[in-house]
Length: 339
Image (tube, rainbow, N blue to C red; front, top):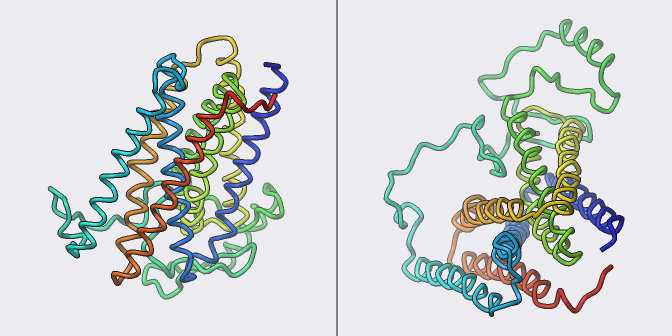
């Protein structure tokens, strides 16, 4: 395979993923619309299906050093997803039939106190629903009725704004960096590490085949949309303006290109099995430990049996469509020639 082709497709895939992640920002104003939970549920289910399937059908076999189309591996891997999906359906049906509430569900632990706003996990949506009001491209209005609101010294603010304007681009003017909560920097740093590993997986996959690269990229882009939506909400809630959130999000996205370069170089000159193993484990963790609970959380918040059934159907459509996409790519990869 031509090295230029690998670099070209890899760069294109990472660029599309980074641009797609910005879609989350444009959907922030729609988070209070009645149809938005349904849309988010589908994309979370789609992300779970693609991440899980990509790990089981492609990344783990590549890490172990064998062709997933040999020795009936695909059929057995379908059984792995089938076991996961069957238990998911049975549990959901039983809960709806028995009307089991969340607090009476399968748990061996007492419910913990709700997390504070400053300790939101990556991708979680804050519980305080009125803490963010998008007013314009450059401003975020926070809850002024909060008893913790601090008085603003107008003279000090004016002088500080003058200093900030001297060192920052015009469109980045807004909240001072020192006023942004620590959680925003934690999210930005973790996103940079996350994107670097994504880039490694994409680069190594493209060195195997173009279809393998597109399969991994598809799983990542499906995961990035709901993931980045949650991140944008947290960044805005932490005190960033919209331009600042976009800037630091794109800054963390640069690490994906760095990871892509390392992935292609390592995959072209060495056996990339270790990269596939790490990426496979990461994909399984994100799908099952991060995004699956988020999908269940959205479902539990719905009231009424009919509404729960609708969300259950949407979850199934998302999971099955994500699995089908990766399965088709795996089965017919050898019959499609992209370069």
